[in-house]
Image (cartoon, rainbow, N blue to C red; front, side):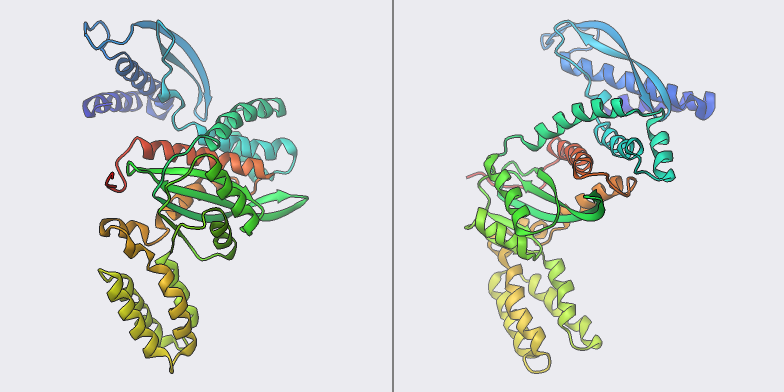
Length: 387
């Protein structure tokens, strides 16, 4: 949609709201989406309605009504058709996948009798209608097929892979436990980000990370030049087993945080943090090692535990110096995947507690799939030179 097209559509929607108040919100949304679908069909056909064009790829064939139940009531859209049936507007589905998964997660709690009044109220507000167990089963099956296909899709070469995990509360075996949500984010050879996979496991133990990484490898992930991750025994062991020859960059941000646990006096914390930042901010590996040696020597007597830790741990954060300088800023930490985790958390915190691992994986997959699709159609994250 061009800027003018967006402006016209938004203006029409605003006018409806101004004329009818917020009671006109449903009509405004319907008009806005109808206009977006028309624009998308024109782009699919390569020509505007009634336009004669050598680039035309087909012909319009009227509209079909489609009624959708939403949080603002039932909406009937005029879905544009084409003669060969090759077009279905993504505008009607885009952005609904994760919302549908969230509804299902909440609905499961309601139907299974494990929800609180708060969860039941949220379910009704989100769904806008009463949810039966039959509807949940049918919708869950359709959505799971789509999300499972996305998690099993073939992968390719990714020079850089960032790994991280976070936790969600899940009901398991009659108890509420913290399940690990494992995430792998890759930077492809075209410089764009892609969420390679997500998984829900009982913990971050080696066996779960190993299964996760093995699945990525079996799906065709290759060409990895660097892993970026935080320090975790299970992840380190699994990475060495599945991808033994790939170097590892330990998150510099977490390294600086960990240093504080080894500083013997509070008044030294700022000084130590500044010295570690200086090591990481140098322009080459030689200067970084020189500053590290000086830091270790400086604290070898006054803070021997800090010196010992720095000598062992800090080098794990220097692997990034072996890569192009213009890439280092984005490879030195796990910030990129942590921002993704924050977006996942923004959606999952509404559910509070998942009734099972499948429900948690469903919502996480839906959010990850949406974000990954946006990244792959968006701007380049890193400029990678092709050999």
